[in-house]
Length: 390
Image (cartoon, rainbow, N blue to C red; front, side, top):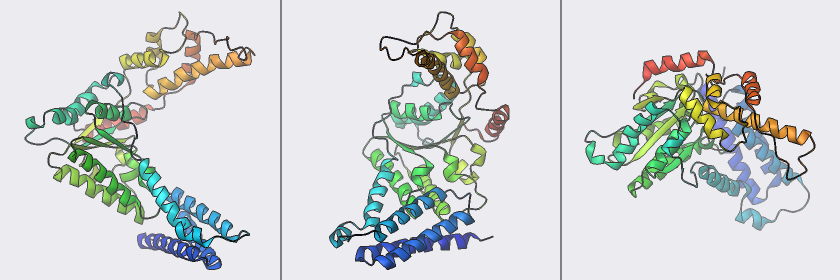
Protein backbone atom coordinates (compact mmCIF):
# COMPACT_ATOMS: atom_id res chain seq x y z
CA UNK A 1 0.00 0.00 0.00
CA UNK A 2 1.49 3.31 -1.02
CA UNK A 3 1.33 5.89 1.74
CA UNK A 4 0.38 9.53 1.82
CA UNK A 5 3.85 10.80 0.87
CA UNK A 6 3.92 8.64 -2.26
CA UNK A 7 0.61 10.06 -3.48
CA UNK A 8 1.87 13.58 -2.91
CA UNK A 9 5.02 12.77 -4.86
CA UNK A 10 2.95 11.50 -7.79
CA UNK A 11 0.77 14.60 -7.69
CA UNK A 12 3.86 16.80 -7.62
CA UNK A 13 5.47 14.85 -10.47
CA UNK A 14 2.35 15.18 -12.65
CA UNK A 15 2.34 18.95 -12.15
CA UNK A 16 6.06 19.15 -12.89
CA UNK A 17 5.73 17.14 -16.11
CA UNK A 18 2.79 19.27 -17.25
CA UNK A 19 4.60 22.56 -16.61
CA UNK A 20 7.69 21.35 -18.45
CA UNK A 21 5.52 20.16 -21.35
CA UNK A 22 3.94 23.62 -21.59
CA UNK A 23 7.34 25.31 -21.56
CA UNK A 24 8.64 23.08 -24.37
CA UNK A 25 5.36 23.41 -26.26
CA UNK A 26 5.68 27.20 -26.11
CA UNK A 27 9.22 27.03 -27.50
CA UNK A 28 8.09 24.83 -30.39
CA UNK A 29 10.01 21.74 -29.23
CA UNK A 30 7.30 19.33 -30.30
CA UNK A 31 9.04 16.00 -29.69
CA UNK A 32 10.17 16.83 -26.15
CA UNK A 33 6.82 18.45 -25.32
CA UNK A 34 5.01 15.28 -26.44
CA UNK A 35 7.27 13.18 -24.19
CA UNK A 36 6.54 15.41 -21.17
CA UNK A 37 2.79 15.38 -21.86
CA UNK A 38 2.93 11.57 -22.04
CA UNK A 39 4.80 11.45 -18.72
CA UNK A 40 2.11 13.67 -17.15
CA UNK A 41 -0.63 11.41 -18.51
CA UNK A 42 1.04 8.23 -17.19
CA UNK A 43 1.54 9.78 -13.75
CA UNK A 44 -2.07 10.96 -13.50
CA UNK A 45 -3.41 7.57 -14.53
CA UNK A 46 -1.12 5.89 -12.00
CA UNK A 47 -2.64 8.08 -9.28
CA UNK A 48 -6.13 7.05 -10.39
CA UNK A 49 -5.23 3.35 -10.33
CA UNK A 50 -3.58 3.50 -6.90
CA UNK A 51 -6.42 5.53 -5.33
CA UNK A 52 -9.66 4.44 -7.04
CA UNK A 53 -11.84 6.23 -4.45
CA UNK A 54 -9.94 9.53 -4.48
CA UNK A 55 -12.20 12.54 -4.96
CA UNK A 56 -9.99 14.22 -7.58
CA UNK A 57 -9.83 11.23 -9.93
CA UNK A 58 -12.41 12.67 -12.31
CA UNK A 59 -10.31 15.82 -12.58
CA UNK A 60 -7.12 13.83 -13.16
CA UNK A 61 -8.77 11.89 -15.97
CA UNK A 62 -10.02 15.13 -17.55
CA UNK A 63 -6.50 16.56 -17.46
CA UNK A 64 -5.04 13.38 -18.96
CA UNK A 65 -7.56 13.55 -21.80
CA UNK A 66 -6.75 17.23 -22.41
CA UNK A 67 -3.02 16.46 -22.60
CA UNK A 68 -3.76 13.60 -25.00
CA UNK A 69 -5.68 15.98 -27.26
CA UNK A 70 -2.70 18.35 -27.24
CA UNK A 71 -0.40 15.49 -28.22
CA UNK A 72 -2.61 14.73 -31.21
CA UNK A 73 -2.39 18.37 -32.31
CA UNK A 74 1.41 18.38 -31.98
CA UNK A 75 1.66 15.13 -33.94
CA UNK A 76 -0.59 16.41 -36.72
CA UNK A 77 0.56 17.80 -40.03
CA UNK A 78 1.20 21.49 -40.67
CA UNK A 79 3.19 24.16 -38.87
CA UNK A 80 2.13 25.70 -35.57
CA UNK A 81 2.62 29.44 -35.67
CA UNK A 82 5.21 30.51 -33.09
CA UNK A 83 3.38 33.81 -32.57
CA UNK A 84 0.20 31.99 -31.52
CA UNK A 85 2.14 29.95 -29.00
CA UNK A 86 3.93 33.05 -27.74
CA UNK A 87 0.76 35.04 -27.23
CA UNK A 88 -1.33 32.20 -25.83
CA UNK A 89 0.59 29.14 -24.66
CA UNK A 90 -2.00 26.35 -24.88
CA UNK A 91 -1.82 25.34 -21.25
CA UNK A 92 -1.47 28.87 -19.85
CA UNK A 93 -4.38 30.20 -21.88
CA UNK A 94 -6.53 27.23 -20.91
CA UNK A 95 -5.52 27.56 -17.26
CA UNK A 96 -6.53 31.22 -17.18
CA UNK A 97 -9.85 30.53 -18.91
CA UNK A 98 -10.75 27.48 -16.82
CA UNK A 99 -9.73 29.22 -13.60
CA UNK A 100 -12.08 32.05 -14.51
CA UNK A 101 -14.97 29.78 -15.43
CA UNK A 102 -14.41 27.59 -12.39
CA UNK A 103 -14.70 30.52 -9.99
CA UNK A 104 -17.59 32.04 -11.91
CA UNK A 105 -19.47 28.81 -11.25
CA UNK A 106 -19.17 29.51 -7.52
CA UNK A 107 -21.00 32.82 -7.60
CA UNK A 108 -24.64 33.03 -8.68
CA UNK A 109 -25.08 35.78 -11.28
CA UNK A 110 -28.65 36.46 -10.20
CA UNK A 111 -29.47 36.88 -6.56
CA UNK A 112 -32.02 34.38 -5.16
CA UNK A 113 -35.66 35.42 -5.16
CA UNK A 114 -37.20 32.88 -2.78
CA UNK A 115 -39.77 34.08 -0.27
CA UNK A 116 -40.26 32.46 3.14
CA UNK A 117 -43.79 31.42 2.19
CA UNK A 118 -42.33 29.36 -0.66
CA UNK A 119 -40.51 27.23 1.90
CA UNK A 120 -43.38 24.94 2.87
CA UNK A 121 -43.35 23.72 6.48
CA UNK A 122 -39.95 23.51 8.21
CA UNK A 123 -41.06 25.98 10.88
CA UNK A 124 -38.41 24.91 13.40
CA UNK A 125 -35.64 25.27 10.82
CA UNK A 126 -36.92 28.66 9.63
CA UNK A 127 -37.13 29.94 13.21
CA UNK A 128 -33.56 28.86 13.99
CA UNK A 129 -32.19 30.47 10.82
CA UNK A 130 -34.04 33.73 11.42
CA UNK A 131 -32.62 33.92 14.96
CA UNK A 132 -29.09 33.25 13.73
CA UNK A 133 -28.99 35.45 10.62
CA UNK A 134 -32.00 37.66 9.94
CA UNK A 135 -32.37 39.26 13.38
CA UNK A 136 -28.62 40.07 13.82
CA UNK A 137 -28.55 41.69 10.37
CA UNK A 138 -31.54 43.92 11.16
CA UNK A 139 -30.53 44.79 14.77
CA UNK A 140 -26.87 43.97 15.49
CA UNK A 141 -26.99 46.31 18.51
CA UNK A 142 -29.17 43.75 20.32
CA UNK A 143 -26.44 41.07 20.19
CA UNK A 144 -23.60 42.06 22.56
CA UNK A 145 -22.40 38.42 22.66
CA UNK A 146 -22.30 38.17 18.88
CA UNK A 147 -24.23 35.71 16.78
CA UNK A 148 -23.68 32.34 15.08
CA UNK A 149 -21.92 32.48 11.73
CA UNK A 150 -21.77 28.78 10.96
CA UNK A 151 -25.04 26.93 10.28
CA UNK A 152 -25.36 23.28 9.29
CA UNK A 153 -28.53 22.09 7.57
CA UNK A 154 -28.78 18.32 7.43
CA UNK A 155 -31.44 15.81 6.55
CA UNK A 156 -32.81 13.67 3.70
CA UNK A 157 -32.24 14.81 0.11
CA UNK A 158 -34.92 16.88 -1.57
CA UNK A 159 -36.40 18.42 1.59
CA UNK A 160 -35.55 22.10 1.12
CA UNK A 161 -32.06 22.76 2.47
CA UNK A 162 -31.03 24.81 -0.56
CA UNK A 163 -34.39 26.56 -0.58
CA UNK A 164 -33.90 27.64 3.06
CA UNK A 165 -30.49 29.13 2.30
CA UNK A 166 -31.85 30.99 -0.73
CA UNK A 167 -34.81 32.32 1.27
CA UNK A 168 -32.65 33.80 4.00
CA UNK A 169 -30.37 35.35 1.37
CA UNK A 170 -33.43 36.99 -0.20
CA UNK A 171 -34.67 38.18 3.19
CA UNK A 172 -31.46 40.06 4.05
CA UNK A 173 -30.57 40.94 0.42
CA UNK A 174 -27.27 39.13 0.79
CA UNK A 175 -24.60 38.28 -1.71
CA UNK A 176 -25.25 34.57 -2.16
CA UNK A 177 -22.17 32.51 -2.98
CA UNK A 178 -23.18 28.95 -3.82
CA UNK A 179 -20.49 26.28 -3.78
CA UNK A 180 -20.26 22.59 -4.50
CA UNK A 181 -17.34 20.27 -3.97
CA UNK A 182 -16.75 19.84 -7.69
CA UNK A 183 -16.30 23.60 -8.14
CA UNK A 184 -13.91 23.92 -5.23
CA UNK A 185 -11.87 20.93 -6.34
CA UNK A 186 -10.57 22.83 -9.35
CA UNK A 187 -9.85 21.22 -12.68
CA UNK A 188 -6.26 22.29 -12.16
CA UNK A 189 -3.90 20.70 -9.68
CA UNK A 190 -3.07 22.91 -6.73
CA UNK A 191 -5.68 25.61 -7.36
CA UNK A 192 -8.49 24.37 -5.12
CA UNK A 193 -7.02 26.14 -2.08
CA UNK A 194 -6.85 29.42 -3.99
CA UNK A 195 -10.50 29.03 -4.98
CA UNK A 196 -11.47 28.56 -1.33
CA UNK A 197 -9.46 31.63 -0.31
CA UNK A 198 -10.95 33.69 -3.15
CA UNK A 199 -14.43 32.55 -2.19
CA UNK A 200 -14.15 33.80 1.39
CA UNK A 201 -12.30 36.95 0.34
CA UNK A 202 -15.20 37.83 -1.94
CA UNK A 203 -17.69 37.26 0.89
CA UNK A 204 -15.71 39.43 3.33
CA UNK A 205 -15.36 42.21 0.77
CA UNK A 206 -19.12 42.27 0.27
CA UNK A 207 -19.73 42.49 4.02
CA UNK A 208 -17.17 45.27 4.41
CA UNK A 209 -19.04 47.23 1.75
CA UNK A 210 -22.24 46.93 3.77
CA UNK A 211 -23.92 43.99 2.04
CA UNK A 212 -24.28 40.74 4.05
CA UNK A 213 -22.80 37.64 2.46
CA UNK A 214 -23.85 34.00 2.67
CA UNK A 215 -21.47 31.25 1.62
CA UNK A 216 -23.65 28.22 0.88
CA UNK A 217 -21.82 24.89 0.59
CA UNK A 218 -23.91 22.04 -0.75
CA UNK A 219 -22.90 18.40 -0.19
CA UNK A 220 -20.56 19.55 2.57
CA UNK A 221 -19.54 15.97 3.33
CA UNK A 222 -17.87 15.73 -0.08
CA UNK A 223 -15.52 18.52 0.91
CA UNK A 224 -14.87 18.05 4.61
CA UNK A 225 -16.08 14.54 5.36
CA UNK A 226 -14.12 11.91 7.27
CA UNK A 227 -11.61 10.17 5.00
CA UNK A 228 -9.88 6.88 5.73
CA UNK A 229 -7.10 7.62 3.25
CA UNK A 230 -6.68 11.21 2.12
CA UNK A 231 -4.14 12.37 -0.37
CA UNK A 232 -2.39 15.71 -0.79
CA UNK A 233 -5.02 17.78 -2.58
CA UNK A 234 -7.87 16.95 -0.21
CA UNK A 235 -5.79 17.63 2.91
CA UNK A 236 -4.77 21.07 1.68
CA UNK A 237 -8.32 22.05 0.74
CA UNK A 238 -9.69 20.90 4.09
CA UNK A 239 -7.02 22.88 5.94
CA UNK A 240 -7.70 25.97 3.86
CA UNK A 241 -11.44 25.71 4.49
CA UNK A 242 -10.80 25.27 8.23
CA UNK A 243 -8.58 28.36 8.28
CA UNK A 244 -11.09 30.51 6.38
CA UNK A 245 -14.03 29.34 8.51
CA UNK A 246 -12.11 30.11 11.71
CA UNK A 247 -11.35 33.57 10.36
CA UNK A 248 -15.05 34.29 9.97
CA UNK A 249 -16.30 32.66 13.17
CA UNK A 250 -13.57 33.84 15.55
CA UNK A 251 -12.29 37.07 14.00
CA UNK A 252 -15.19 38.28 11.91
CA UNK A 253 -15.92 41.10 14.36
CA UNK A 254 -19.30 42.46 13.36
CA UNK A 255 -19.10 41.52 9.69
CA UNK A 256 -22.22 39.83 8.42
CA UNK A 257 -20.60 36.85 6.70
CA UNK A 258 -22.31 33.50 7.23
CA UNK A 259 -21.38 29.97 6.23
CA UNK A 260 -24.34 27.65 5.63
CA UNK A 261 -23.43 24.03 4.99
CA UNK A 262 -25.89 21.44 3.71
CA UNK A 263 -25.42 17.68 3.81
CA UNK A 264 -27.41 14.48 3.39
CA UNK A 265 -24.77 12.57 5.37
CA UNK A 266 -23.99 14.45 8.60
CA UNK A 267 -22.44 11.33 10.15
CA UNK A 268 -19.69 11.58 7.52
CA UNK A 269 -18.51 14.97 8.79
CA UNK A 270 -15.32 15.26 10.78
CA UNK A 271 -15.78 16.53 14.35
CA UNK A 272 -13.38 19.53 14.00
CA UNK A 273 -15.72 20.85 11.33
CA UNK A 274 -18.98 19.93 13.07
CA UNK A 275 -18.15 22.10 16.09
CA UNK A 276 -17.54 25.12 13.86
CA UNK A 277 -21.22 25.11 12.89
CA UNK A 278 -22.81 26.60 15.99
CA UNK A 279 -26.30 25.91 14.66
CA UNK A 280 -27.02 22.33 13.55
CA UNK A 281 -30.54 22.05 12.19
CA UNK A 282 -32.46 19.00 10.97
CA UNK A 283 -34.45 19.60 7.76
CA UNK A 284 -36.92 16.69 7.93
CA UNK A 285 -39.33 15.05 5.52
CA UNK A 286 -42.54 17.05 5.04
CA UNK A 287 -45.45 16.20 7.32
CA UNK A 288 -49.04 15.77 6.10
CA UNK A 289 -49.80 19.51 5.97
CA UNK A 290 -46.52 20.28 4.19
CA UNK A 291 -47.13 17.50 1.65
CA UNK A 292 -50.57 18.96 0.95
CA UNK A 293 -49.07 22.40 0.32
CA UNK A 294 -46.37 20.91 -1.93
CA UNK A 295 -48.99 19.08 -4.00
CA UNK A 296 -50.89 22.35 -4.38
CA UNK A 297 -47.69 24.10 -5.46
CA UNK A 298 -46.78 21.56 -8.15
CA UNK A 299 -50.31 21.07 -9.54
CA UNK A 300 -51.26 24.73 -9.79
CA UNK A 301 -50.45 24.81 -13.52
CA UNK A 302 -51.79 21.33 -14.31
CA UNK A 303 -55.24 20.53 -15.67
CA UNK A 304 -56.86 18.33 -12.98
CA UNK A 305 -60.08 16.34 -13.18
CA UNK A 306 -62.80 17.03 -10.63
CA UNK A 307 -62.11 13.76 -8.76
CA UNK A 308 -58.52 14.69 -7.78
CA UNK A 309 -58.30 14.90 -3.98
CA UNK A 310 -55.07 16.53 -2.90
CA UNK A 311 -55.78 15.76 0.76
CA UNK A 312 -55.93 12.06 -0.07
CA UNK A 313 -52.73 12.33 -2.11
CA UNK A 314 -51.01 13.96 0.86
CA UNK A 315 -52.10 10.99 2.98
CA UNK A 316 -50.99 8.39 0.42
CA UNK A 317 -47.57 10.00 -0.01
CA UNK A 318 -46.41 9.62 3.59
CA UNK A 319 -42.63 9.31 3.64
CA UNK A 320 -42.19 11.24 0.38
CA UNK A 321 -39.73 14.13 0.20
CA UNK A 322 -40.58 17.40 -1.51
CA UNK A 323 -38.63 16.30 -4.58
CA UNK A 324 -40.48 12.94 -4.56
CA UNK A 325 -43.78 14.83 -4.75
CA UNK A 326 -42.49 17.06 -7.53
CA UNK A 327 -41.35 13.98 -9.47
CA UNK A 328 -44.76 12.37 -8.93
CA UNK A 329 -46.60 15.37 -10.36
CA UNK A 330 -44.20 15.50 -13.28
CA UNK A 331 -44.64 11.77 -13.98
CA UNK A 332 -48.45 12.11 -14.02
CA UNK A 333 -48.23 15.06 -16.36
CA UNK A 334 -45.89 13.17 -18.70
CA UNK A 335 -48.31 10.23 -18.68
CA UNK A 336 -51.23 12.20 -20.13
CA UNK A 337 -49.00 14.06 -22.58
CA UNK A 338 -47.65 10.69 -23.74
CA UNK A 339 -51.19 9.51 -24.40
CA UNK A 340 -51.81 12.56 -26.59
CA UNK A 341 -48.73 11.84 -28.71
CA UNK A 342 -49.47 8.12 -28.95
CA UNK A 343 -53.00 8.88 -30.18
CA UNK A 344 -51.53 10.82 -33.10
CA UNK A 345 -53.40 14.01 -32.17
CA UNK A 346 -50.37 16.00 -31.01
CA UNK A 347 -49.72 17.28 -34.56
CA UNK A 348 -52.90 19.32 -34.20
CA UNK A 349 -51.82 22.41 -32.23
CA UNK A 350 -55.36 22.76 -30.88
CA UNK A 351 -55.29 19.31 -29.27
CA UNK A 352 -54.67 19.28 -25.53
CA UNK A 353 -53.99 16.45 -23.04
CA UNK A 354 -56.99 15.17 -21.12
CA UNK A 355 -57.40 16.27 -17.47
CA UNK A 356 -55.34 14.32 -14.96
CA UNK A 357 -57.51 12.01 -12.87
CA UNK A 358 -57.16 10.74 -9.32
CA UNK A 359 -56.56 7.26 -10.73
CA UNK A 360 -53.55 8.62 -12.70
CA UNK A 361 -52.04 9.92 -9.47
CA UNK A 362 -52.72 6.68 -7.60
CA UNK A 363 -51.01 4.59 -10.29
CA UNK A 364 -47.85 6.71 -10.08
CA UNK A 365 -47.83 6.87 -6.26
CA UNK A 366 -48.30 3.10 -5.95
CA UNK A 367 -45.40 2.46 -8.35
CA UNK A 368 -43.06 4.94 -6.64
CA UNK A 369 -41.17 4.22 -3.44
CA UNK A 370 -39.99 7.06 -1.16
CA UNK A 371 -36.38 8.04 -1.84
CA UNK A 372 -35.65 7.99 1.92
CA UNK A 373 -35.75 4.66 3.73
CA UNK A 374 -36.91 4.17 7.36
CA UNK A 375 -33.33 3.20 8.28
CA UNK A 376 -32.08 6.53 6.93
CA UNK A 377 -34.69 8.41 8.95
CA UNK A 378 -33.57 6.59 12.07
CA UNK A 379 -29.97 7.60 11.36
CA UNK A 380 -30.92 11.27 10.93
CA UNK A 381 -32.89 11.34 14.17
CA UNK A 382 -30.11 9.59 16.07
CA UNK A 383 -27.51 12.06 14.79
CA UNK A 384 -29.83 14.98 15.56
CA UNK A 385 -30.23 13.85 19.15
CA UNK A 386 -26.45 13.57 19.51
CA UNK A 387 -25.39 16.85 17.85
CA UNK A 388 -28.41 19.15 17.57
CA UNK A 389 -27.86 22.83 18.25
CA UNK A 390 -30.93 24.95 17.49
